[in-house]
Image (cartoon, rainbow, N blue to C red; front, side):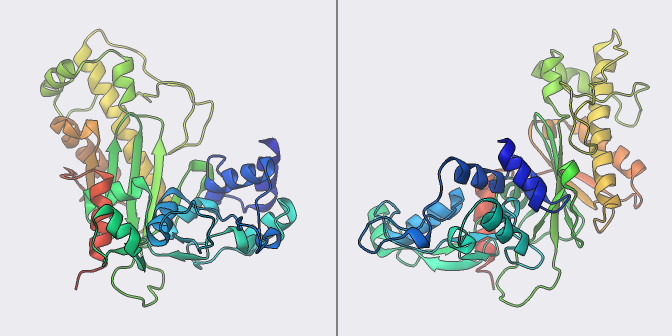
Length: 372
């Protein structure tokens, strides 16, 4: 609502990722605007009701596994994780909810005790924090020794699936789906909400020691992507046949920005940016060549922008490809060449990821915490 965005503009720092109108902070404020949350101050020991606390989906599932379901009205503390709390406003560098967030909730949203509606603990993804309830284990035929660990987001889990749970800085994953999404592991924190760029603190595994600055999973997403291929009428068979005829070491003379409609978010934030798919050649192979080159150039520019914003290293060393577009061997070769030509270091490799399912990445994340 307008009121929610006014509060975000007034209290949330410039370029902070929590300024997004689709983030969990905006959703929390909208919920409070529509119906005030029940807080500890409202709680009545003679009533079954208890204070309401924000839960992300993974938090809710974890709490249900620990407390035999959450529909009984019993009180329980909520534990969340760095990744899910990022867009809520959690300070991933200081590892705490910032003072501006408490001020926003108390002064702007009228919550008397902001801490009462926020997760009580925020842990590293993959960090053990509790055990399954014996009753839940029995009900679902699970071991009573099941340990619950901090969760993550679906896109970060997909990164773990493609790159593994312990990649080195410079490892990147590009998702070539209907849109284009890029993530790179960086030694430096990067943030620019205006372009949708933010940094997730990378998990620490098997240790409670302070990881100092650690590593950061830096990401950005473009509206450019493979959806344009369907829009322009390319079938799977045509894509395979024409791609086999394209020379990946040759440049198309055409310079496209292959959006499907007006508006771009990364590597440039321009809601008025128009698709560029002209001039259109009569030869379908040349047309495809220019479109694939255009998408690849957005990927190249995206990694360049991440480097300019402070990512370290400035260029990826290896890019794992996933999504439908990763099946195209010619395109992998074309993208690798143009990334090498456009980068400052020049040694990047582009490969197809063997695993891309978020569920696989989540399993890797959990298992990594228990490795010797």
